[in-house]
Length: 72
Ligand code: SF4
Image (cartoon, rainbow, N blue to C red; front, side):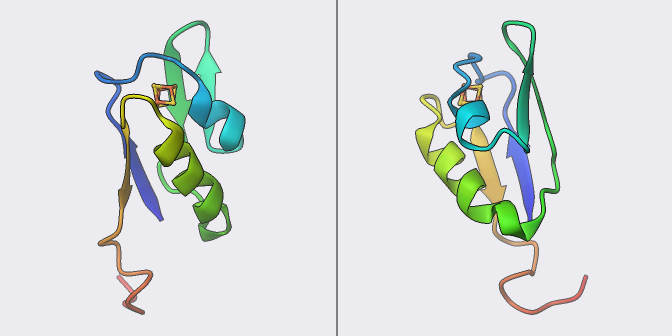
């Protein structure tokens, strides 16, 4: 799966870090870093993190073909 975080929106609330700490990390107070291609096993965590983000900064790419059985 692929994710994108709009870092212009992100306010460093760290809700995503609590819910999916393997995927999202805060370096310092507001510098969020993240794994843009997390393992599909993390999908539920990432979806919860995206839902919890107060500013909806986390976008999950649903067109990457994984749910459609495409290979590319
Ligand atoms: S929950 Fe949203 S605002 Fe907070 S650190 Fe994560 S992406 Fe940024």
